[in-house]
Image (cartoon, rainbow, N blue to C red):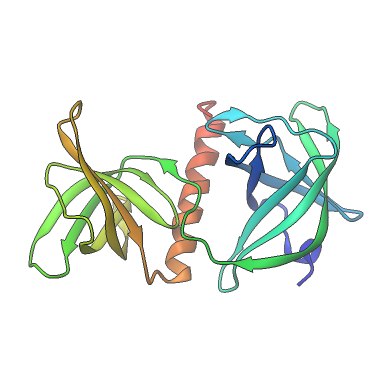
Length: 215
């Protein structure tokens, strides 16, 4: 699998970096603007809604997705910074990509209706998402769900567009400020097509927020 032949203009990227040579690892997001002469050109990355500068010589771990193929990661080095109206970085892939399996993905803060049905009870619990990723969701609900419970989640990405995923409650606590329960759910057995739909939803909302100048 050749990186340059696999990547496409417009692809969304996650970039894993470490700051100050410490153990803290961060995820920033970017997009492929061009591919030529053995290099990949990406837009100025974003971290928590703010532009994140890279420096020449910096090594990056870059993650991209291919529906039906899975998730891949490769190492790249920043070769050059292009200063135009939109800051662009030229990066050079180092080595071949590796296929990875990850539980957690970039999270998007967004409110969407969700219905959770307990596996062992004929009970439906309503809530709203606080954030969503390809690996799970955080939900705010007036009803608590015990840690370890298995649930079937119907998430309404749009008014007439929903997905169904199985998950396990990994945390549940009451927020004293909101007076509601905050429920962390980790997906399992999720089909790659459904995961890809979630990831596409996340990046599309990021694009719209960026266009409005909100990130």
